Image (tube, rainbow, N blue to C red; front, top):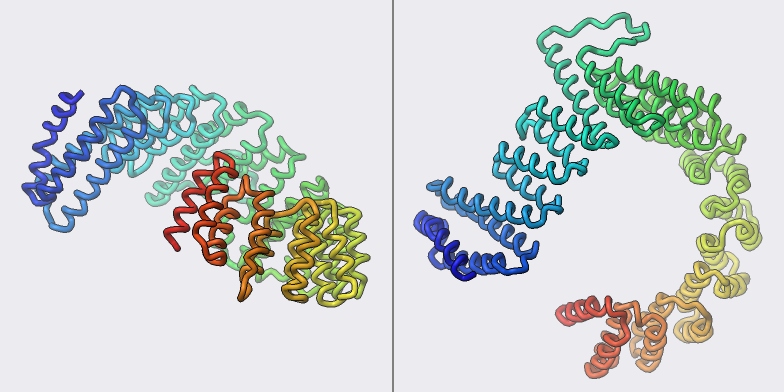
Length: 587
């Protein structure tokens, strides 16, 4: 093995001597480079070769190549550039070839080799690598797409015919591939746009016929795109998602207006009861709205809203209402919509209609409330929130809004509203309602707070009782000081279940006193570690830190450290050791 290594190193000597002679590296640096390479070469000659051995060697040579570039720029030395850099690049190529030969199944290594070749501007070699990789990974759809993009890109070969050939091969190998098919469609659209722009520059663009007439003939530049589209309908029957993706791709090409019209007509005919289709057909009218005048923008918005209105008449499902109202709300964020005074009343009327029909979703109900608040239409909120909670009684967000309005503005009893909400809202989602009621009672109705707080702390739902006990600790300390905190902690610590946050709050407050009670702190830490010591590394670290800072003894901290190592789950011990080491460094 040593003979092969030394032979390889001897072949590197002329390259290193040239580096030293032209002043890129000193003799000492070249010796260091040789030593590093020797270590990597020995690892490659081992019987069991690992991926890391190849990757580390490649990374070292790549960094060396980058360093050479910086050194040349610094000293302005361009002599023997091809010879030195090429020898290193050839070595990297050789390493990549060995890596991909030994680990053929890993596509990532092929892509790394391809990326390096692109950096070296070796276009022909990139094409060859793609061909070799695709022979081994013919089922990798992304690889076919990347190869085609490379062939067609200006940075690559710029060969559209070769790109088309690659995609066709990929489609034959993966006949059910949606990714490859959509890339083929996009590719033909892009080529058609290039031809259309070229005709426009040369003054050869055909005059369009009467615009009012329904156009059935596709633009000649997009004939191939239309053929691909028709093939797609056969390849993916009853797939509105694929059909919509083709529609969206065509909408991005302004020159393909007739093809867009054709696809839109097919969508309406093929999927008349699919809400996503009608949502896309409505939003298509907003294409290029940012580049339009105020009058044109208003017309585009009107056409979009009209499609939504007509669709809701014919397809009044909850899903369609959700898509329509979401799309209409998004219209309000457009700068072009600020000049359309008719848009907001129209949207509000549709929300009102959806509310009456009971087709508004809980999420959109929350959006409606936020919209009314932004507009200052608070008089309508009580009725709206009441109707929304009747429609979606399990929505905690809607009940929160209703509770806020009824308690703060209508003067209703907070406990009564909370009780009504808890009858329908799932217990595991109800903590925000409890928290609102607790905060309200703490500020406005203190006589009811203790009873409400006890009910929350004794709840059988962990999502309620755990945060409620933490809330109680905070509130008691603010109101009753340290003595009150200790009494509440003593009574709550015996309740089950318990959270690590409960102990952390108490420990943090005790440790922040001018004269911390070490005995109480240790007791709290011991109890917390008994419950959570197997899974919480930070708890043990805080315990150790407390012993150092408050207890004043490193020896006790060492005892805690040893206990942590025994108590933590095996997969967490290494993490604990790293964190403990960093804690010592910071300290």
